[in-house]
Image (cartoon, rainbow, N blue to C red; front, side, top):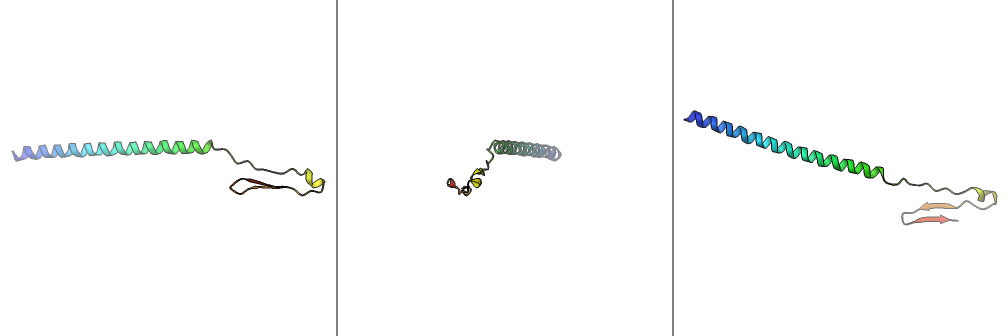
Length: 82
């Protein structure tokens, strides 16, 4: 009788350990999938952001004796110094 009880408890323990392993593996796969989707979304979002456009002034003012205008952005708006 003791031997049968020992075998049943061993089988039950193995089933619980297997179920726990399957649960942990499924949670790990779910987390890996979520992270992969977030990384893909971040990569696509960075790809579709507009590229900064550099501004330049024309040099036809130098021939007429006027100084070249300075253009810059201070974070609050574009400043054009004529």
